[in-house]
Structure formats: C-alpha cells, structure tokens
Length: 409
Image: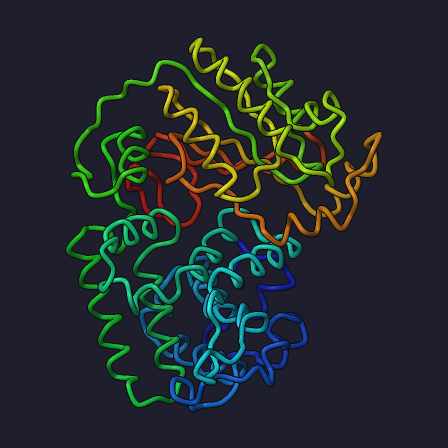
C-alpha cells in the first residue's frame, strides 16, 4: 500500500501479487470516475465505447506494463492515479463539433483543475498531487508535441513537473486502451516522443539549467541555448503571494517578511471602497502604480493577492522582471476544513461560493514561472508546519519527480 496516499486512495492502487484493478471500489470511492459512465466518445477514435470503458481499458493496459510494475510504490501510485483520472475533464467538455462528430476540446486542462480539487479534498500531499495533475494536464502531449515548434519547451517543462517517462507511460496506456484504426500509429508516436526526450536528456530526469535565473529567462523566451548561463542582472527581490482566502498569506508575510512594504489587493479595496463583486479595474490600476513606484526605486516588496491562476501571476511577475527584479512566488495552502475555519473567523468572511470558484480554477505555481517557487502547507495553524519548495538549489523538495538541478526521486 503506497504510504504517500491517504487511506481512502491507497487501496485503489493495484499491487502484487494479483495486480487486479479494483474497479468496483474505485467507482464507489470516486464520484469523478463514476461520472464517466455514459459519457460518449467519437467512435472513430474510441470504438470501445464511453469514457468509463476507455478508462478501464487504459488502467488494465498500464497495470500489465512491466515498466509500471517495476516502479517504486509512490511513483507507481502517481502513474496509476494519472491514468485513472486522465479523462475526467471529458464530462464537462464533450459536445458535438462543427462537423457533428463528438469532441472534448480542453478536457486536459479541465481535468487538471478537477483532479487538483479532488486530491486536495482527499488530503493527497502537495508534491504527489501536483505530479498527478501535471500528468493529467499534459497527457495528450506525446500524441502531437513533435509537430509543434515549441516541442522542446514542452518537454523541458514536463520534465520539471512530473517526468517525461511517466508521461509516455500514461500516453501508451491511453493509446492501448482504445479500439481505433490508428492505434499502432498512436503507440509509435508515443515511442518517438520518448526517443525525442532521450535525445534532449530529459526523459527520466528533470532538465537541468545552469542557474535559477537561466531557467527563468529560458522559459520566458524559449529558443536560446538552455545551457547558457544567462548573466544575472537582478538587483532586488519581489515576492508574489498566491493562495486561497484563508491560506494564511497575511500571517506568513507578517512572520517572514515583516519589514517589507506590502501591496495588498484586499487593503486597496477597503481603501478605495470597492466591493469584491464590483469592477476590480481601479484596484488593479492602483496596485500596479504602487508596484512601479517600488520597482523604479529598486525596493523589495510583497504583492499580496490570491493569484490562483498562472495568467494572473504572470502579469505581476513580468512587470517585476521588466524592472530587473528577482521574483519569488510563495504559494500557501491548507486543508479544506482549515480554510473554512479561518475564513469564518474573518471580520468579513469570503462567501463560500467565491472560494469554490477559486478552487475550480486553482493552479499552484510551477518552477517555470519565476526565479524561485515555494509551495507551503500552512497546516492547522497559519504558521507553516510542512513545506514543499522549488527554488534554485539542487536538493529542493520537488513538485513532481525532480529538482531544478536534476536530482530524481
């Protein structure tokens, strides 16, 4: 039984000697999997039937693969959960296309977001959860990546988040678990992706970069030599906070960066008398102008907002980087019941529906977004009790299976 998983999930992962997939137990435990029943698929690509049938076939194919059986317990559990949940996004995205054929555009991203909320509520540890989410998000990559001009960047990013060998294993199970005329072509394409990642040196290890600054610069503008140690011209640090309401951001800042100026969107709303449900344009404009004042002075500061999506963080990170700042993203989280309790204790609690909407689009930061990324579980109290961090050290605890410097779990 994988020790990295909570008791609810651990019995669902097949193991020796029988390696049987406990499908009845899986459906009884996970509503997201049970919901796959009767979700139709295009028979051209999925002649086997609905998404539940395909998922069961993919799980069976994975469990029969000797490469999967040879994995360490924790890694084997991550790979199984990724295959089990890889198509849960089809429930909300399946619809007829312009030609009348069924399609599920965007189901990988929808699945990632759904799986993150599911595993968070089931108390799966951060690193394990994010590795599974990354695999779900990228599970179609081996099918089409080699046709893309940004294939190199995609392969490097996956290597930092989950691992290309695990992704290729998932894609092979996805391809084997279907009935279609081009099944052999799909599996051959997955093999080509594996070979491509081997040539890039990032199949079974994370892509190593000379420094955190070199890594950040490369992902900001891919195409240059990834081995070039870009000159680090940063002169001060900007800290960008990220986390759901109740994650403990204010408390963390007060205890860890007490002397730094803070640009707080909540405080600005109160100052400008703007309701959270109204147009936030004036709040953001005021916040960015205050940020520019600090940036022009080369003064370290903290940007404090929920910033639950990559796009929201990118605006602030890019602004800071344009002024020569070194950016650290600090992402805080806590268990659902802790979030609820802290929120209820606020003078003005955030409505439950608002928090649910934030959870539905929650994307914790990854190491391609900034010079350093720290993921911190603030535990039963706002003071961090355990953490998973990704920064510029080779022995960092990781999001997924490896560190920036190339250490593999």
